Image (tube, rainbow, N blue to C red; front, side):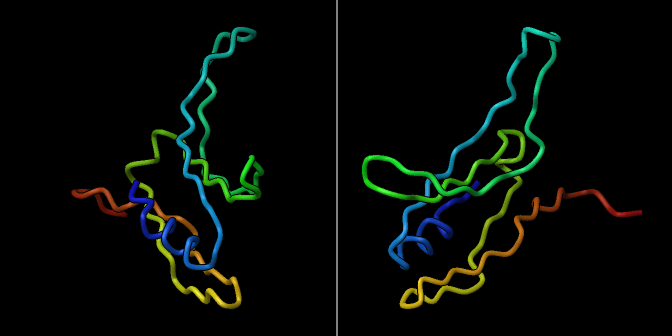
Length: 94
């Protein structure tokens, strides 16, 4: 995943963002894999203050394309489209 566009968009409006990949994990109780199916964007806090955290499942990280549609740093406004998985070459909707 190319996170540079979204990182620079957040930086322009004076906010921090961290992008974190979430791997699948094994549960002992029912002996199965839990695999996150979608991304999430949350507000978190650390020693430097609040930041945005974009969590992306590992299996989607290469296909996810996050862009900034509009940025108005003075108003602290950032418009992000819903993340879309990149089209896989050689496939069609038919």
